[in-house]
Image (cartoon, rainbow, N blue to C red; front, side):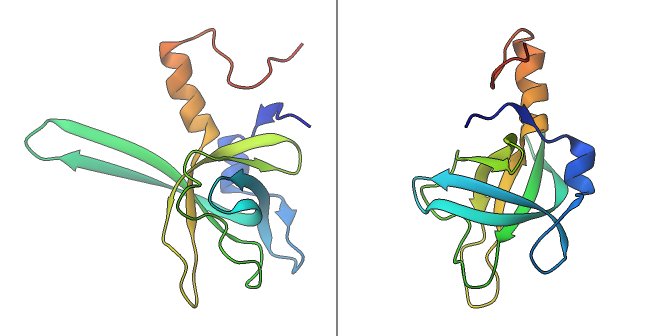
Length: 136
């Protein structure tokens, strides 16, 4: 199996799949160095702008919240998983793990930067690049 495309903005914001409980989400998978193979549920997308005072820098970050697939499954991501690729059941890249809240008794959230956001930035500097196999 190889990844052959990526999930677009609209589908990340409005998923069309359901988990085993009938809840709307995007079911995702990743294989990271910290936790190995894990399944999760991507829920929505957020955007953050950070201004660094005195440096004239405004930085925007787009992040997807990813929860463990169920409460029994443990964390979706942990230290050592940063940079791992998150994919969906259709062999499409969803994003790249960038951080998380760390597990506790009630919540564990991992964050991934959406691939479309990364792809736009790479293509602006390297217009002929492909980070997954190019369509034939």
